[in-house]
Image (cartoon, rainbow, N blue to C red; front, side, top):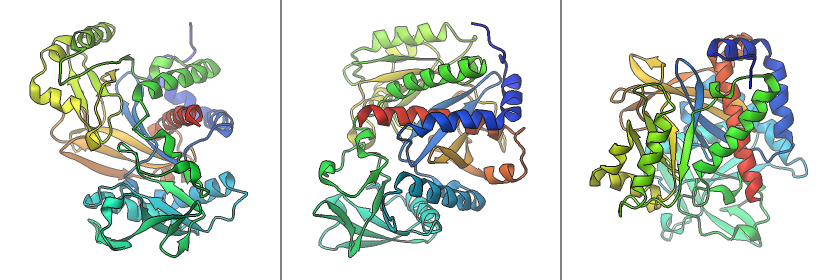
Length: 406
């Protein structure tokens, strides 16, 4: 099929000159979907394309947004909550957090997420639904890396309603990706919980996300005559792999070689656990032989992830050779969204990795940048406009994932 826009430069020019039309299209398509209340999308940019490489429905990292973007996220949170829950009078919101409360940077994230929601005019409380976090106490007081005090209530369910201590909650925002499912009877809850707890990593698959994303991009590309290869990484999927027992590695190696054969010379691919998160369960290889001859240490890394989740499904993804640099380090972009609208982001860089490797790993640092400043200046010539559109397309795919489990 012939397309009108076939290069990165043509894509950037089209989006900057058709900004309102493109975003109207996205708004219309998301209107009928259960768009997650928040999300984040990791995007890599090479010399020839932009591509999302991960999409989180329960994002951490609000502490990495600049304050101007955090202020903007407050306004969008308010609009989104009032729009999605117009039938309710939402005043008190509970944030259901992750269990790894010893991660002080995660506590920073919670503090900034709470600030964003509080600045929207809501009373915001943290609640823990993991019984192991609490002994006999009904609340915990913790200190974050940046010395923010975090008070966590032991969540209670009374007659189907969530409570944080003496505070009856009108709405709960889930910030636990459920790699290990929380022991909660969600069906009996009368308090709305968003995003839905049914889409956690105990059942969600990257294989499914990127399949849906490719379909979303196909529709978008047909609408605007854009070559879809400009907007995504090529990928293959495989099921029934057991790295510990070396089962399925021959077939996986063959699929790696098949994908590499379609890419430019000396390309690499990312072999990712389909349920992996926090940058875990990822190997970067240049041939199928590297998979078949993988040593025990690397097979162990690919075998078990967060909360001891066993990896058996794998996605093989084109290694998008990042052209971005920050202080001479290879870098990639993370975009944060509220209600499917881009509100901010940051650059992730890593001094110990090159442009073809996994940057979401030890050695990474973050650089804030302000999408809000770009919007104020109406500077849609900036690459952030393209990042925003790709993040919205990826979040639309996430919304379809949610629709499919409801």
